[in-house]
Amino acid sequence: MNPSMAYLSQELASASPAKRVLMLYTRAIGALHDAIRAIEAGDIQRRWSANSQAVKVIEALWITLDMDRGGEIAANLDRLYGFMLNHLLAVDIHNDPKPAKDVIALLEPLRQSWQELADREGDTAAATSPDSAPSASGTPDSADAPPTRIIVSA
Image (cartoon, rainbow, N blue to C red; front, side, top):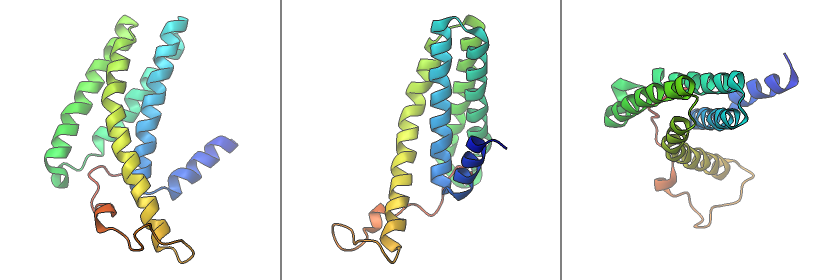
């Protein structure tokens, strides 16, 4: 295993569920940006590879939805992921960057939400570690605690 893959495996293994989902969103967005750059460069193979990578990540997010416990949020994500996957077909069929840009625009707010959750988890972990400084208020704010359930399993 090459060093970068070993590092990625280690990072995934030690990441919280929210951080893992965040990493998936970040990866999908990065792959779509690469697909757009490939279209601009006229590199069809790179476009196909990058778009395919984004599709695989979105499929992974889609199939790991917890529809039983996720309620309306999971149902909305289910429809959204299906839309994204159908929309991304046009990237390869028409060599068109617009669908990739559209999907990025849908993924970004989701990524940002998971970033905020991962940051709160990190803050909570830091606040409970014995060598950490107290929060600004001196006590943890229960509103900042991460939810006990995450609708997307990692």
